[in-house]
Amino acid sequence: MGILDRIFGNRKEPEAGENEIADAIIDRIVESTDKRLALVSGYRKILRDCALTTLEHLRALLQVIPGPIDVGAAAWAQDHSLHAMLARAEDAPRAFSADGTVRAFFESSAAEHCLALFGLEHTERHVLAPALVGEQVQHGVARTTVSFDHPRVLAPSAEMQTLRIELGKRMIDFLAMRAMEQVSARRDEKKALENERALLKARLALAERAGRGLTGLAAAEAKPRSDAATIARELSELEKQLAGFSSTGLMQELLETVRGTYGSPSMHLRHAVSSLSLDAMNFKVESSQKSEFSLQVVDLWLANRAGERGPFAVIIARFPRSELLPSQRLLAEAQKFAL
Image 1 (cartoon, helix red, strand yellow):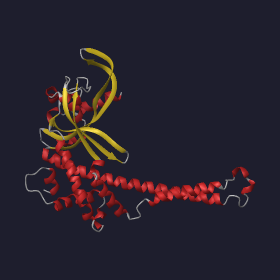
Image 2: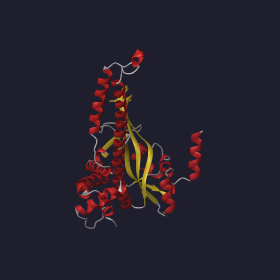
Image 3: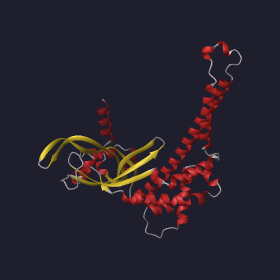
Image 4: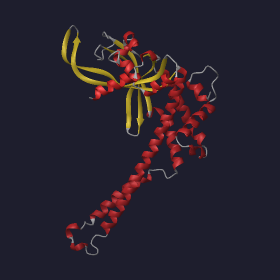
């Protein structure tokens, strides 16, 4: 068993030293980004501190995710907190039965249950709605409605320990992809600026040649000399932007980006823990008021090249094999909704 397996799996055996732990994370980073990083002189020393920063962040995240929580039709009838996340009892088995990775898990394993990270898009909207104020119903009261939609399943496993290990490794890999996206985005931006610079230089050359040759015969098409000064200023500003880009090679640039990403993991993978008190209609209520459901929510935000996605309310769910829906039924339901 590797070092990362022991760390994320909460093994009771003595933990490795910091350097050994950092090296294991760095090896995973190199494997997930570009193996040529290992050829950069001093790369382990450069990445050691940020690797340990990421480990601390991921450990904190894994420790607060609730679970395992039974998610199924039978569990829904017993656990009222599931009512806030899944509107009907049948929504629970449908959510995990439609996931190909869960079906593949049950096909390859004899386990009676499947553990997995279960996430739902967490949305809060401010609306005007009736509300009981004191003993009277008032209309047009500002209220907050909470919804949980579009269920997602990640990393099906047979045991809690295996799931924790897989999630920890996937989070390291996610940050690696984020670093690669940033390098790619900056390369694209630099290329676009270089193309724009070439165009401005061509325009400047044309503006400076205005009045030569036969251009004076086409007075309507002639450009004033002031255009040359304007274009020159634009070109100068663009050159300043280009000067801000690293002139080092690709591997050195990637190394610096990786260090920045793993040194500030909360900028790319962050979470927040909150407690919700909801009524039967999923409206937020004050803790002092009567509520149907009280649940702890761990929200997860993921950053990517297109921006930030989330929040996703996440739990570690335990799905029962006995409630896995037949694939024929899922296909029939999909065809019904497609009509």
